[in-house]
Amino acid sequence: MKKTIFKSIGAILAGFVFVVIFSVLTDLTLVKTGFMKQPFDLNSSWFIIFVIFYRSLFGTTGSYLTARLAPYKPMGHSMIGGSIGFVLSIIGAIAMWNTPPHWYPVSLIITTLPCAWLGGKIFLSKTK
Image (spheres, rainbow, N blue to C red):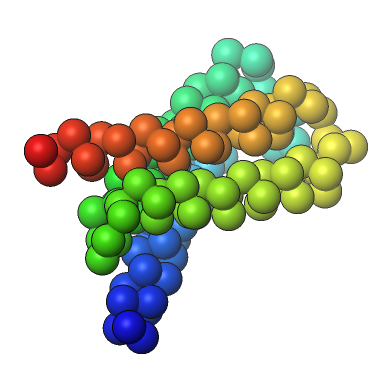
């Protein structure tokens, strides 16, 4: 029983760490190469949409990884990870609300759970 709980926690943590590491590394690379301007609101709307796209891609991939590593109920594990990301996105939006554009953190909140579901669904489709 304890071993299963640790595997569940590990699966969720692995997906979360994947998303954070790849998001941060991509952001740093874009800043260092001059593609992403700082402060963030100096970027064009199209570039911010690109950021939302790659973060959604990383979120979906992280949820796939969570589902793949889950000892049971892969979709449930993906959705737990997504729920954690959803809450953290809300906290981030509140903390950064004074930083425009406001639609960016709202879009991250909106896309978190669908990306978690999609990652789990992709994994399940490959196991049939």
